[in-house]
Length: 277
Image 1 (cartoon, helix red, strand yellow):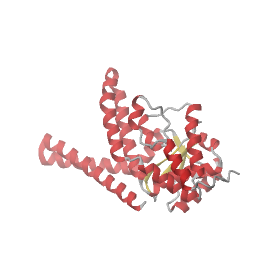
Image 2 (spheres, one colour; image 1 turned 90 degrees about the vertical axis):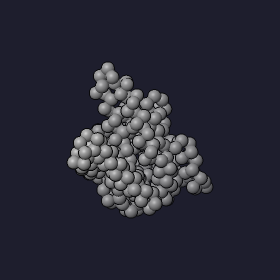
Image 3 (cartoon, helix red, strand yellow; image 1 turned 135 degrees about the vertical axis):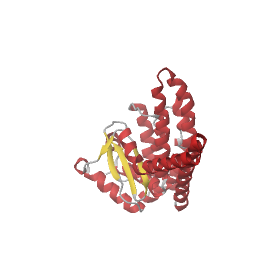
Image 4 (tube, helix red, strand yellow; image 1 turned 45 degrees about the vertical axis):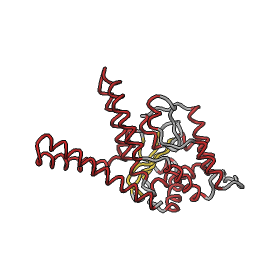
């Protein structure tokens, strides 16, 4: 977990450096050293703004609103309990008024993160499975996957949405920008992060079967409840909520669901008793 966190921090610093270098190079071509310095400085400021506010922007983009304690006190206590077990600060909670069951984290790391859950998730999962889903998201926070995911998804969504301003050139712009956004996402996000988060959630909850059952339940939900969002947000979710066709295929970063379930079951093959009271 510490190695993964260090690698994610390194990825972020490299991303900052590359952005500044590209902006500076472009400025140099336009006006020499002075212009290059201005462009590089602006790139650094833009990177810092993304670092500070990208999680809020993502929450707003996906229709999440701040959670009120009176809505579901049990959720607040559940997240606080699991955050203490995971060794991270309790994330700021958001709620999405959507029947599709989903949860995701955004933010910077163990000391500053946000967790969003949909009303559909709260209604669909029994307590043991909800614990497992929250623990999985907190695993991403602990390993700072959330930092890289927030950067990658923010950039990818921005590029994909830019194609919508093209009018009659929209399809051409999407044809150009979507592969760039997809390559950026796959360069930064490895499917191994999901397997590591699954294993960590199993340790925090004391059993792997709650998460395995939740994965299967959420996968089936995709066949029963309609869902609409930018395909570039796929890395945020516990399971892939999109059809494996069209542009959505380009942003798949999750391992096959069956592989994840088999790995989880193998962690405790003799017991599947869950406290679902």
